[in-house]
Amino acid sequence: GSLTMASTSSTVFSTTPVAGADLDAKSSTPAFKLLTPVLASDGRKHVYARASEALASTDTIKIGAAGSASSDAGSAGYDVNTTAGVTAGQYFWARKTSLA
Image (cartoon, rainbow, N blue to C red; front, side, top):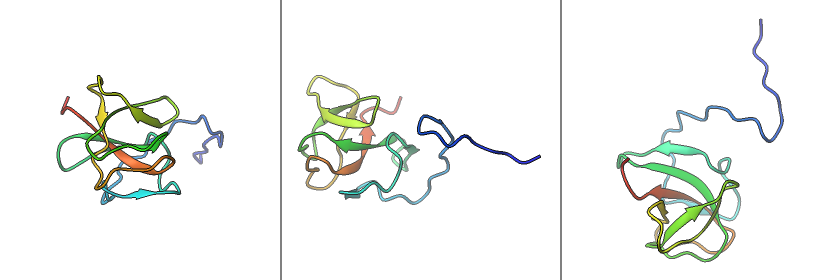
């Protein structure tokens, strides 16, 4: 038989392996589905997100269920980790702050 997949926006599917993605890249148009995870060569999980506000390259951030990233100084979740940060509306790879 053939494998078919429902074509609804809520369908969850495997996106691995994603190899060679530039984790410093940022763009005004999405290159990946929001919340796409990758395990990077630094041993950390990175998640594709969209900045809801301007974020500095060293900002600690939180990522909402829809992939929206915003500043969260008290968070131990993710950081921006892109050269020169991102502007509101840009897509980028957020890096998990810990290896766990």
